[in-house]
Length: 154
Image (cartoon, rainbow, N blue to C red):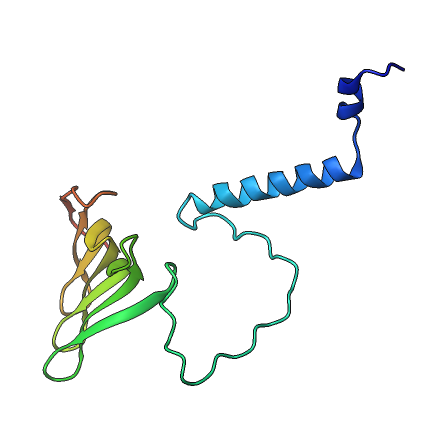
């Protein structure tokens, strides 16, 4: 065995192994966060004591980026006209992101599909008032599609 400093550095030690494991875990978490939340959630961290409850006089905290809320508009009769999933966008404003539905005044579903940044995207299904499919629209991933299709035959 030599007294070469480089060979000493390359020997595994508990500290180097632990440091490498932490670095790999941090990279994995960072990469998983880049896909918009489509991958599995990050592994749970070691449990820490729960924080003390906030005093009643404290103002409510701002919603986290991934928080979802439902937005609804009603017809004058009180029945639902539109319902949307809303999420905060990168600028901090709420936007339609997720499932969107519109209803006839009688309460039957009129159309449904997905929104991304307030734009209709993907396949939208339109219904007749009797509940049968009227037609489809494919808006594409960016909302600039526009192809229309007939409903499938029974």
